[in-house]
Structures are given as structure tokens and as C-alpha cells.
Image (cartoon, rainbow, N blue to C red; front, side, top):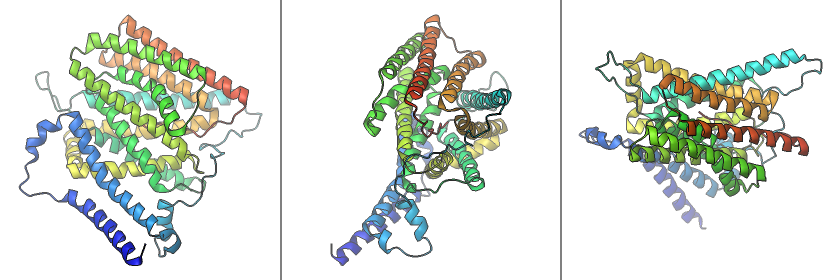
Amino acid sequence: MPPFRQSRVRSRYLLLVILLFFIPTVRSADEEPSHLNNWHDIWLVRFIINILGYATIIVPGYLLIKYLKSSNYLETGRGFCYPVIKSCVFGSESKSGLLDEPLAAPRNEPESTSSTKQALKLFFCAAGLQVSYLTWGVLQERVMTRSYGATGEEEEGERFTDSQFLVFMNRILALTVAGLWCALFKQPRHGAPMYKYSFASLSNILSSWCQYEALKFISFPTQVLAKASKVIPVMLMGKIVSRKSYEYWEYFTAMLISIGVSMFLLSSTTNKHPSTVTTFSGVVILGGYIMFDSFTSNWQDNLFKYKMSSVQMMFGVNLFSCLLTVGSLLEQGAFFESLAFMTRHSEFAIHAVLLSVCSACGQLFIFYTIGQFGAAVFTIIMTLRQAIAILLSCFLYGHPVTVVGGLGVAIVFLALFLRVYARSRTKRSKKVAPSQPTVEKV
């Protein structure tokens, strides 16, 4: 391509970037957003508005990256910012296999370590995971399904409705924790282009949004069982994205999970949700959560092919998640509205902060547990956590469970335990080293 044609293409890219960054921020002084309130109550409208907000950041970023690649910046770039831009757009290393060392301290303790010490360490990990995620589950249901500021039985109070702000709160604290960890502890040299984290970030914030939003339409036990059943779409995404193959027992346990979840959903629908529209909305949002979350885990598995630790993954994904959510919140004007809600209701502010603390601490317990005891022990602990979360939610918030629904729950967790047992037997027989864990986002 002639030089003058190249300069034209570059100038067009830069012009598009500038326009896409500044156009969404221009608003008329006479604009009256109040007429949109009724439309904003529809979850699909909020979802589309969020997507458009993310697009105002992702599209200019895509055009900028394409411009840098087409202009041969890797060979000709100079200046103070060149190393940063090169790392963000092109990466610093090629794919070099999975990271050999887990995030937490490897299990290199001397053989004389007493079994009592190991038992105490296991108890610490299990207690940390249970407390973090059980508290997170209770607070999640409290924030999304109950009112704040009610002074008596006659006053209904005010409900918090912006799920995206809760996602931002969780991600900003997780980003801070991951950043401090990377600064304090030695991490491997980072090789992945930074922009590749944005794919996992986008799917992760969408899955988290669906997770919070679904509680407006369905019960928390139904959501927990749906999360347990995401094994099925993860397998489908694995075949599509990573071209993985699965054993017969994986298909068998996936079928058992789908049967158990169907039994629970059918029993709870006939008792709890007489409105077909409400039930359909909840199922659609849960389907969105499972689809986005399945993509996130498979994309993170591909990213781990670069030499990185799980905390570096946590930092990169949360960095883009914060940029996308805060940009969308500011464009909608919802950021300051949510802050105003926090100032009006101090109880909500405490709940939101505790929700974020539990999320960040839970992720650190995930890394430490897998590093010390392996993925099988971690999966057993988290499966028990899901069962306890259902019982705790039914006890605190009065969700009824029929005999058929209880049998469905039992089938789901039986299938999960069978899955853990079969996987550990397969790994032992093949003597395969455990792979890098995927960060669990909440």
C-alpha cells in the first residue's frame, strides 16, 4: 500500500477512536431522562444499555489495536510508552506452556510435617472458603431481594436495583487485592497481550450481572443449582472453543445433573412461581449466566497457555472489568445514583462492602487451597458449600422445598461427588500434573 494511502487509513482509525470516546458523553441540557424510568425497569433494556456502554470502550480499543498492528508499530515504535504499548498489544513472550508452579506456596514441606498440622491447615482452608462464600451468598440474596429504609410494616422501603454497580464493587476490591499480591510476591514474567483479558472480562461481568439480576425473578436455591449444572455448557464450550474430548463418566454425571436440576425447577415452579413470564425471565437470565460463565472459564484456560500465575490472571481480568463497568455506569448516570443510595442507607453500604470483601477473600482462599491440597479437595469443599448455601437460604428466607425438589438436589450433589471421585481416579492412573486453576468469580 502506498505511503499516502497508509496515512489516510491511520487518520481514519484515529478519528473513529476520538468520536467513539467523546460522543457518548455529550448530552443535551434539556434532556429529561424521567420518561425512560418505566423502560429501565425491564431487565432486557438494562442489559442492552449495558452492552452499548461496554461497546463505547471496546470498539475504540479494538480500532486502536488494529491501527497499531497495521502500522508496524512493533518494528518502528519508539518513545517512553513503547514498552507498555508493546506489552499491552503484542505481549512480551510467546506461549510457553502452563505455569509449573501454582499460585500459593507449593507443597514442598518436609516429610516430617505432622498430620495434625495438615489437618489444621485443611480446616483453615475449608473454614475460610465456607465463611467467605456462605456470607457472600446470604448478603447477595439480602441486597437483591429485600428493601432498605423501611421503618415499619406499612412502609415498603427502597430496593437497590443496579446489579452492575455490585459487579463494579466486587471487581475493584479484587483488583486491589490482586495488585497488592503481585507487588508483594514474586510472579513469573508476564507474556500474554493485555487486551486478551478483555474477552474474559466482558463475559465475566455479563455473567455476574445475570447472577445478581436473576435473584429478582427466581429463588437463591434455584440459582445455586443452576450454577452447579453449568458443567454441561462448560463441556459444550470446551468442545467448541478448545476442541476438548471428554470421558464417558463426564457425560453420565452431566446427565444426572440435568435430571436433578429439572426435578427441582419443575417442583419449585409449580409451588413458588405462578407467573409464567417471571419464571421465563429468570430461566433466560440464568441461561445467559451459564453461557457467559462457560466462555469465561474456557477463555481463561487458553490464556493460561502463556506463562502466568492465577493472581496475574485475576489482576488482568479485574482490570478490564473495572474499566468496562465504571465506564458504563458513568455514561448511564447510575454510578452517582448508586453512591447516593449508599449514603441514604448505611446498611446497604455495609452489605456492599462486605459482599466485595467476601468475594476477594474467597478468591485468595481458592488459590491457597488448590496450591496446598489440589483441585479435588477444593471441589469437594465448594460442592459442600453449595449444599449448605441452599439449606441456609431456605432457613433464613423461607424458601419451600418439596420432596421431589429435595430428591433433585440430592441427585445433583451425588453427581458432583461422583464427578470429583472419577476425575481423581483418572488423574491418579494417568499420573498427570494438575492444571492451572481457573479463577472463580463471584
